[in-house]
Structure formats: C-alpha cells, structure tokens
Image (tube, rainbow, N blue to C red; front, side, top):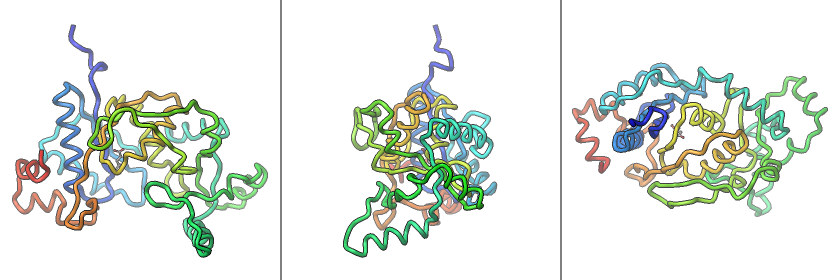
Length: 293
Ligand code: GLU
C-alpha cells in the first residue's frame, strides 16, 4: 500500500527575511531539499518574521526569488510566523498558567551594566553558548504584587522561562537524536546553559525558541535540518517540546559556510549574497560546486 502523505518525512527551510540570503542559506536550503528528495519526503518553507522591526516584504520576496533560482520547489501555502502570533501567545499563556514564566524588566543596558560591575572584581559572569550573559536573578524573585505594580506602572518587560523551576519539574535526562556533521547519536540536552530564556519581548510577541518549536510541531516536521550554529539551541527546543507535549523530530545540524576570515557568513556580507552571485552570471551548478554538493 502506498504511504499516505502523513507517513512521509517532512523537512523545512526556515529563513528570516531580515536580509538577503547568502551561500550559507543556499547550503541549508539545498541540503533540506536534497534530503527530502532522497527520502521521498516533503519540503516546506517557513518565513521566520517575528521580528517585525527588521523583517521586510522586500526581503521576503528576495527569498522566493533566490530559492526559485536554486531550482527549489516548496509546498504552498508558505507558513509565515507573523500570521501565528495567537498560537505563540496561547503557548506562552499555558506556560504562565503552569507558573513557569515571569515578567523580566531589566533592559539590555541594565543587564550589561550589572555584568560589567560584577566582572570589575575579576569574577566572570556566566554566559550562554552564544556568548550572551545569562539573565540575572532579580526579576525571578519578585513577588506577584510587585510584578503587577511594575506592569501597571507601564514598565516594558519581556517574559522569561524560569529555568530552575522547569528543570525541577520535567523528567530528565533530556536528549535528542542527531544525524548531522558534528556529534551524532543520542545527544544529552542541557538547557540550563541558556539560563532563563526569553519567550516573548516587549517589541516582538514571540521569541525564536518558542515560535520555532511550536511551528516545527504545527507543520509536522520530522527532520530539522539546519546549521551547526543552532546545535546548542536544540536543548531549549527539546525542553519546550517536553513541557508542551510536542513531538520530537530528528535533528541534523550541518556544516557551516565560512567566509575568508574563517567566520560564519553574515547577511551583511554582500559578496556571498545569492543575488550578487546571480548578477555575476553564476548558475545553480556553480553554486553547488562552490558549496561542495
Ligand atoms: N530562522 C533561523 C535563521 O534564519 C533558522 C531557524 C531554524 O532553522 O531552526 O537562522
């Protein structure tokens, strides 16, 4: 009997329209597409545009142009995160109802100043795998009455996950199945290294971690294929899956494309931009060769 569409593996490429795609994105999109083809799977596209200030319709159109130029075909409709803020909000409410979330009032500048003052004595403030300082304890310990008062005063705030509380609640150990270019097999997930991760901000109604986890489940993604720069973030995604009762995809973190300086490409580097390479007359074969595919 032929497999029903729901039995097929489901892959996705999930770019953010906050700049032009470069060779690193091409690698990710092509690997996803190639794996979907090779495994008789589906290939979905998701536009990760929760950052309303930095994402633009022009960059979104450029994504469609660049991916079509790479010969990719994706299913319609494309999921756009800006159309699903209600779903992210509902999940945030659920976690709030479980008393696992608190309003966080410190601005980036205040956190920076606090860390600098602490480190002035030669001590080191703990940092997450991306190098950002962990969020201080201050807001976690506030009383409910004080939280309500600060919010009523109009103080801007984010919502953060109380990591210590969550870790006391869920069943450990937590792990994921990895098939990528780095470590493979069953990987132990340690979300504590991220501290109290942000779930929504005053200027963005959801965070990357929350929306990516919910959307992978909503789209039935069975294989998350993305760059090794997101390897460590998987621990947070597994934690949210566990808390929200979501299925666990297989993860495949692939090698990164690096620039002449040996660092991961950034969207501001025009020379490796796909549109610029197209304008220079390169074709799909050249791009595949450049990427070693
Ligand atoms: N939107 C993320 C990015 O452009 C990718 C998220 C993911 O693949 O999990 O880096």
